[in-house]
Image (tube, rainbow, N blue to C red):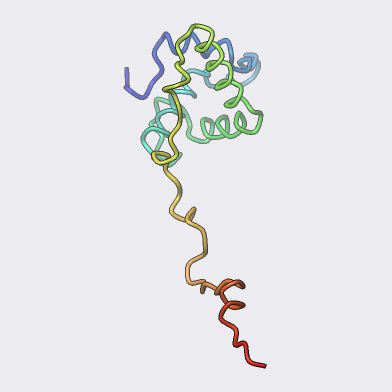
Length: 134
């Protein structure tokens, strides 16, 4: 098993929380576990969707399910349910577990102003430096 893939224990926790697998009429849909493993591979490796290995299925299928679940709120629901389960089991120490924004990567354009824009002096600084002659 690849280190990006879900263990049987992890899959056992997630499987009942996922939307139902589509019925097997017509073209069969890709198994949720395979799709999740593909999503994990993309997110952990940082690769583009088109670079997804074939063992996870067609990259378009995996990416469309990722975005569809994002739009439907599946990811937020999964996070909330797993967090609630772990809290009930006493597995979360709220004094220790947190997300530190200093380790969360931001896109290079998240710094603010667009490239090449001039900075304008603040209104307060202009008012303070205005000549005061009568």
